[in-house]
Amino acid sequence: RTTSSSLIDNCTVEYGGSAGAGASSYNIRVGSLTASTPTIQNSNIRYSDEYGIYVTGTGALTIGGVYTGGIGPQSINEGNYVSFHNTASTKGIYINDGSPTIQGNFVGTTLTGINVGNAEGIYCAAGADSVNIGGGAGGQGNVIGFNTDDGIDINNTSGTVTILGNLVGTNPAYQNCAQGDHGIELGMTGCTVNVGDDSDAEANITVFNGNDGLSFLAGASGTVTVMGNYI
Image 1 (cartoon, rainbow, N blue to C red):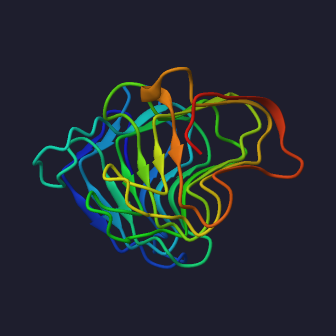
Image 2: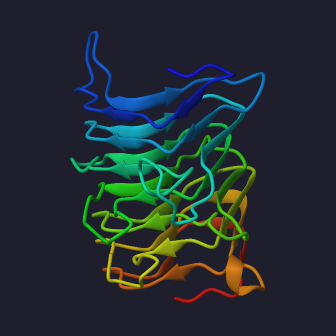
């Protein structure tokens, strides 16, 4: 469990067990944060029975950083590999609360396009607040592929979700890394969602997925802007 000043860097975190007395069903759980922004970066997070990273408290958090194609221990610099959370209903990154920034991660795939998929890639639940997924500067986008359900699934009821510069269903070499279902699914009620913007760096590329590249769930509501993406 992280604290308000934690830095998880260059770690391998794996094998969270089945939920139950004395057992954890996630690799990393982040509770309420009141001081400095903790960071989870450059780590290999894999093989739990439920969630890779589970954010369940209020406050700001950085998951990942900037991918530059370097030669760090995980070969993706500040980003994380989040992989193999692939039993029914598991999530690579589950945001239940708080205001995280999620950037430069490989979620369900590797730099070279190997299938290490989760059941679902990045999932924002109803309690999540303002969430940034990706970014407009180089290396801030996430690479999300081979998840058996959706790549990104948004279900917020408040705040603003910004989705910029991500590769969903492909990788930097533009290989086929399809999700089993939608690339991005919007099922929110009452929040604001921005998908892409007016520059190529901010565009999401969502291709090769088993269902829609961008899907609006029946009953979804809120303010949605979709601009400049490749779908």
